[in-house]
Image (cartoon, rainbow, N blue to C red):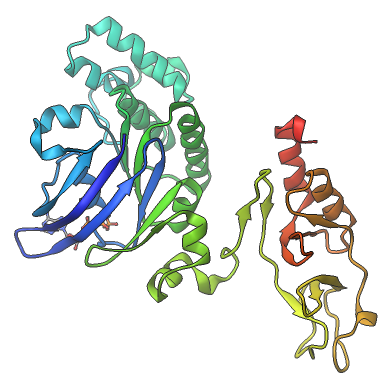
Length: 362
Ligand SMILES: Nc1ncnc2c1ncn2[C@@H]1O[C@H](COP(=O)(O)OP(=O)(O)OP(=O)(O)O)[C@@H](O)[C@H]1O
C-alpha cells in the first residue's frame, strides 16, 4: 500500500505549525523513516496517517484514497501502531494485549489467542511469556509484544513512533535486526519515526529528514542523503562533520565498505601519521601505505611507502575482498572501482561474515 502526503499542513489550535506543506509518497512494501530533531513534526505527521491528528489542510491518501473519507475508528483498527514503551495494557496478559485488535474485530477468544501465540513466536518470544503481565517483562520484551500487537491487525501498514528509544543500545540493535528480518518476510509499508540518524540509516529504505517548523528538508535513500545532503542543516544532522559515516555503504554483494582518508604522493606531512595511512597517486589509485607514527622529510614519495596488499575491484567475486583484507599491511582491504581508484576499505571478519551467510558467494 502506498501512503501519500499531499501538501499537508497541521496547525495546532495554539498556532503552532507542526507540519508545513508536507508532500511525500511512501512506497509500497518499504520502510520509510521520518527523522529530525525534537519538535520537527515527526509524530504529528505519523498520526495524520491514522487520523489521531487531523490535518488543517492537504490530504493523506492510502493507495490513492483520502483517509478522511472513512470512519476513523475503523481506519485505526486497520493500521498497526507501535509506540515508545510499547503502550501495553498493564492489567491484561501479554496474549490478551496482542489479541486486542482481533478481539475488537469480533474474533472469538480462542482464535484470537491462538493467533496471538503465533505472533509471540513471530517476534522471537517464547510462548510461556503469553500468560505474564507486561510489568513482568523486560523493556525489550515489552517492545516485541508491542510489535506483535501491531502485527495482529494484519494490516499492510505499520506505524512506529520511536518504538525502540526506551531500551538500551544492545537490545535496540536486536530489535532493529528483528524488524528487518520480519520486514523481509512480511513486506509491510512501514513508517518509522526516530530522532536517531543511525537508526534511520539502518532501517530506512528511504529517509525523510524534517526540520523544526515541520518542513521536509530532504527525502531519499540513506545513501543519497548521506552522500549528497541538500543543505547545511541536513549535512550537520546526518553528521557530515563527524566524517566517518559519510560514505560507508554496503556493496552489492553485502560487504560493508568504509570510507578511508587518503593522502597523495607529493604531499608534505604536517605531523606524524596517527594510524596506517593509505597513499594514492593523482588519479586516486592506491600506491601503498605509511605505517603509524611515520614522518617524511619533504614530499611524500613511492620510496616512503610499505607496499599494499592485493586490491579488490568492486563487483568481482567476494573472495578477492578477503584476499585484499588479509594481504593488507594495515589489515584493511582496499576496494577500488574499475578504474582502480580508491572506493573504501573492508575488514576481513566482516567479509567472512558475508561469505558464511551466503555460501554460494564463496
Ligand atoms: N496537541 C498539541 N498542541 C499544540 N502543539 C503541539 C501539540 N502536539 C505537538 N505540538 C507541537 O508541534 C510541534 C511538533 O510536535 P511533534 O510531536 O509532532 O514533533 P516530533 O518531531 O515528533 O518531536 P519529538 O521528537 O520531540 O517527539 C512541536 O512544536 C510541538 O510542541
